[in-house]
Length: 459
Image (cartoon, rainbow, N blue to C red; front, side, top):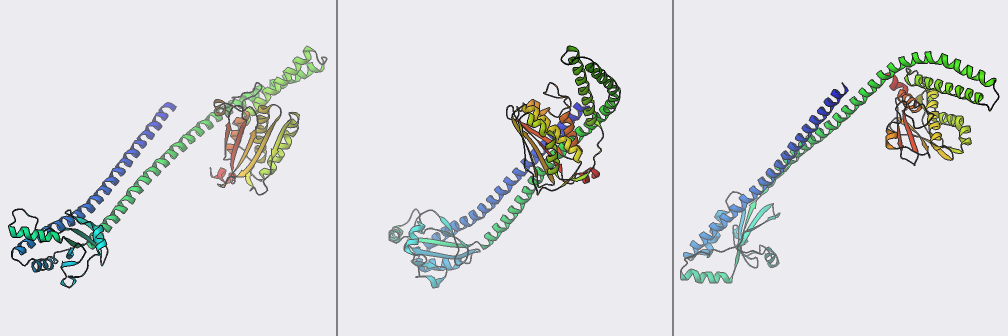
């Protein structure tokens, strides 16, 4: 059944990941198409204006050639500029010499004035190729310009060649300015639409990522809930079994221990019989402790909620193990935090948690070491307590199995102490974790909610 459930979870996660990848790919393609189309529209609109400018310049050159044939090219050119200025979107036409002086203009009053200074004309570098630039005065416009060549045509007669040479002595430049306010407005609208569509695509992408994130969190919470449910079911079954076993074992254990004391009192100390009696009593105590810890692990939670100052609980628990620590030459370190908030918890159970962690730390150290206890607020409605030792540490495999019942690295350990610690912490609505590496000690950290009783009642 667990294998089937695992396969379903893996399948659901795989399908969800595939759908997310497809959605993100489509959003990226959609975004790329939007950007490409916007660039194409902008380029196409500018190319249309440029092509219109080329056509108008060629038309002026063609008309000027005809006017030259009638020996009235200057007046003909001026008339054509004034007439063609009525073209839609055209602001003005101008023909200048290389110094920027206007020789013909769609506005007759500007003829003879200067369009651009000589330095500016040199910077424009007008040649046989049409060039364009954006100007802002007196209004936004796209200016197209190149050398004005009305005589560059094959099959000219002798008079045309002479006029061409004269014209070559005085090169001219033609300028056409197009109104681009409508183009700017269209580009602004397109940019707004582009931004809106990109924002929409971004929101879809973010929503997809968040949905995937929340889906993974949901899957994880479901997995944790399922594991917790199975664990509780196992503990309930184990509890019924443990209760029966404890009843059947403790009575014979009491008899065995009593007989061991009886034989020990009637044999001289140091003898073999005396030592065997001591071993019998010690083993009876160990079995009784195993039964007690097993019952502690599986019994239903009955917490006595109180307002607790963790500074007091930690200080009291350290006093209980101080004598054992001195005998082992182990230093106990703890700095109380006066500003620490009080929490809702069962002080006796927390005391049991701390004692188990201290004893585990001191057994890991053996002799000559340090056990450090620290407490602090997390800022998210929780407090954390850490117990750090300078012991021998543990491997990754040991660290992952450290809270498993009956797992122990000690020859005389029951393997239930840390499992009981985890059970009590979880009864308070908290969590516990361990960090350790071989030869570098271990850090046990458990987190407790400040309002643990309210969460317990809500649960």
